[in-house]
Image (cartoon, rainbow, N blue to C red; front, side):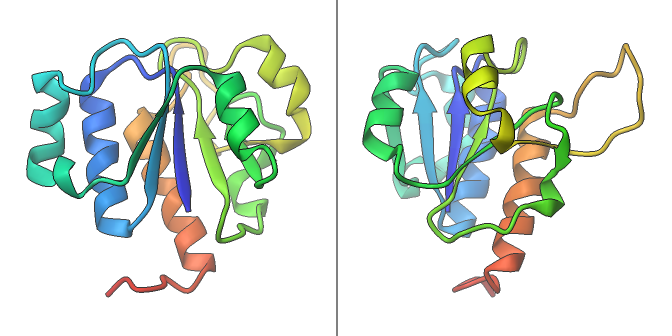
Length: 154
């Protein structure tokens, strides 16, 4: 399983997500530009001493990520998704892709991948637009792992 953060902005979220990836054996992909450096002490603090255990790949931009992994199943998690994340039948080599905290995905991704956009159900509320990124990753990743039988997790 793969978690992809599109242009993440908040170091603490990425640190929390890195811990989740380590304890689940999930590769973390970060797509630049980012709002911080992976050497930032806030990222390191949120990730505790797990950084040396993290399977991490950093991509210079989304097109280079697509070029390398475009033949794998992509699932984009977005408040603009029409289908719910629990409707996905996750493959083991799936890429769960999450947008940046402040703006989600740019329009070109929404247009190109519209059928592959999924959402986490929430009550409608103009002021409470979305869940925290690290919470969203945990919700969807654990559903994917559940479907895979929690391989190697105890």
